[in-house]
Each structure stands twice: as C-alpha cells, then as structure tokens.
Length: 136
Image (cartoon, rainbow, N blue to C red; front, top):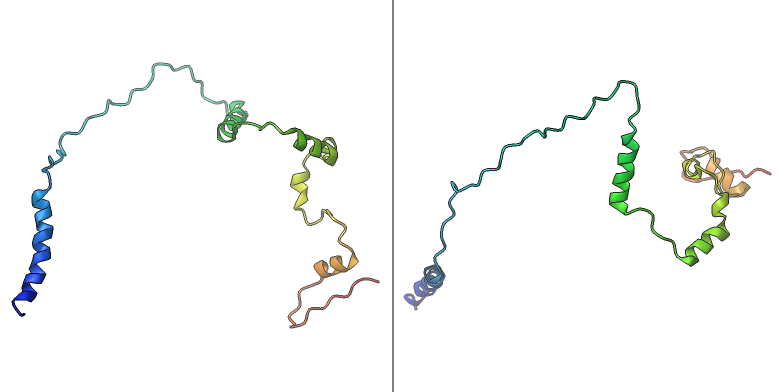
C-alpha cells in the first residue's frame, strides 16, 4: 500500500505534463518585429486666426449643440397621444425658466396646508419628542 501512494501522487503530474508534450508547437512571438507608425505631420492649411481677447466665440454654442446632437440624436418625434396630453396640460402656457425656480425654497409649488407648513418651518429641537404648533 505504501508504494501505491507515491504512484497516485506522481501519476497526475505526469498526465498534466504529457498534455504539454502532445500540444501543437506554436511559434514564439518576436518582440522586435514591431511596425513603426508614420510621424505626425502638421497640415499645410494655416487659415485659422487666433481669437480676439474679450470677444465671445460664436462656435462655442454651435459646438455644444453639435455634441448634444451627436449624443442624443436630436429631439425625438412625439406620438399623437403624447402631444395631445401635453396640449391638455398647457404646454403653450408654461413659464420659461420654470425648471430653474422649481427647486427654490421660496417657490410655493403646492398648497401644503397650514399644518404641513408649520412642520416644515419648525425649528430643530434636541428633545426626543417632536412638537409643532400649527397656527390658529
């Protein structure tokens, strides 16, 4: 039995080593066979003019619009149902810049009621119980 244990340990090693002996020979990579890229060349067109100090670039807005167009593909056509829903919601009566004031704390978006306003406006307290006195 003692002679059988080393054989069990050596047999898998020989089997794994045999796999590399039976594998097809592959050609080693040649690290010196590297293709060289052509050197960078400045194009011969020098028609660009340097920007004038203190002026706004007219292409900056165009570049941003082109980037948005490339990313998102422009405005998607709306379905008839979506257009009708937007018209019923008052798309033409929307205030320009409404999104910029929607998060303003002074903007009253919904009538929350006196109790809710009192809870929101209540000062912080260090007690374990929360209390708020709604206005009468």
